[in-house]
Image 1 (cartoon, rainbow, N blue to C red):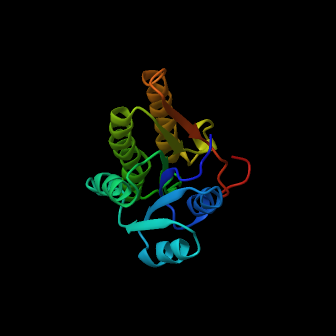
Image 2 (image 1 turned 90 degrees about the vertical axis):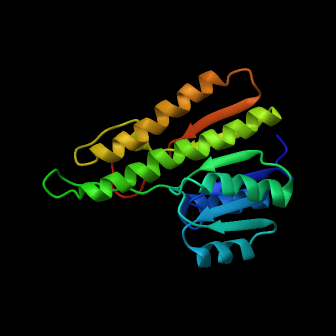
Length: 188
């Protein structure tokens, strides 16, 4: 597929995997919609790219997926690819884990992924094509002590993505998950 002049939306774009994806897609000629919480980091990244628009904010805000789709359509007239990349990792032993932090992780790693995916997929169905890529983790395929809640969020993304892939088979819309290893703990 020729990526030149296609439009990609990347969540969690200000650092790490999201930033690297933005740089690669920019090099391939794509137009980008970038989001993350840090306005400054997004603006710095966009300034280094050829064609990127930014919208800073919390992807857990229920309105944000709609605002991102609107920005893509207003700025470029289309949206071809959504990369659900935003996420956090909260792990720990039962005695020490912060339950409030765990629930925030679930909101970001699961709820925000579902919201962005469904908003994007409704648009893709209207236009008859599109690509949804959910960035997961090896932790969505393999469990480990103290990682239970994090594993659960990434397993949810894997199951969700697989079900969407089956539901959309033959529609011209492609759905996939990518499970890069995380670097927080060796061996996982």
